[in-house]
Length: 335
Image (cartoon, rainbow, N blue to C red):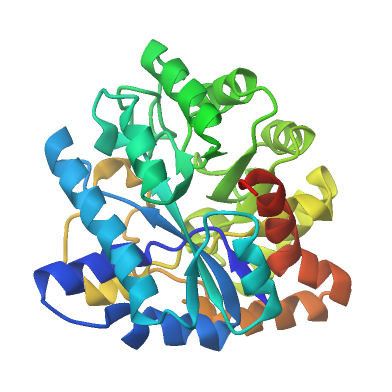
């Protein structure tokens, strides 16, 4: 069983459903891929074009939320929207794919903290404050002056904690990372898709101090499975396992999971759009970049095989591929 903390599949579902007029998009496209890879829990983030004005980002975000709920309706006997810890029972019993709604950056809120409550009513259970760039609430990983939470960001963190939303520190600047940990007391926090800066030095990756701080809060690291953070020079499954082994050494094996962020299919299926300069991609790398033998969720068995070949026990493989995430969410989600 695989529990994946990050896959931008809503981008494709929304485009094909609302722009191309297609029906049963999830059931025909991503669902078979997830099933082939053994994925039983998939976190589905809403990510919007940040060049739009706030009203445009809100419309786009709501369209992706609608695509999320359409995916559930397409296969009501095989999928469930994960809102509570009890919903995880259906996932773990088998035969049901759990989808959990998240936000990758809160730009759709504009300057309004209270919009968070609307998204929670729509099923939101996890949110990051930023993508790579600065917004009214916080600074992202691409900013150079180490800004953190704004006054409005402090208020939003308080509101998200009050609403029971899991705080995702992916894409955060170092100062934002530290500010959120300090502000959120003992609320559940994780990093849904990143890697280890000691293994590959990149602004999107976490230092050992950050990994330890996350572990001290009972948080999780979801390993992002893209060359960008794993190693552009050696984009292999073995190199990804290097990150898992380093994170396990720093945090403990019980604090790591998977956050694939597979973008190769999106690059192939969606109309070509220019990548923003603050995407932090190396020169010449595009959204179609993928690890060798691991370009989508259907290839997760290759990662499991790689872990076993490196001497990982069956218990540790099960913990990293699903058990740690499921345990974390059981504590974090409402009952």
